[in-house]
Image (cartoon, rainbow, N blue to C red):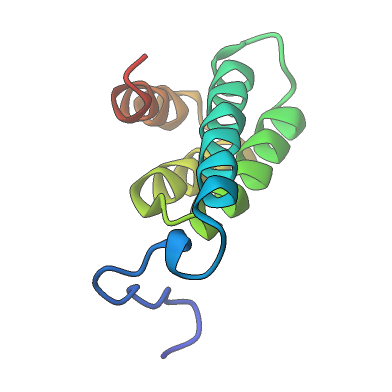
Length: 103
């Protein structure tokens, strides 16, 4: 693996293989709730850039750890847009996040 590149998870690599399925389901549910909270912060123009960045950053980890890779990448892109104070790019990220979260 090269530095800076995420490894692709092996096929059928699922959290339930490594822990109690009920706990894995709970973690996944919480991760979606975290992503929804981050989306609300990212969408609020009254929220500071720093708080938007922090909300996205926190959720990148929680979504990635449970295997929601696409969502994690989208949140990472939103985090970068917030770091750059780039509203146009952040707006595009928000659209993609809403699609992924079916909001």
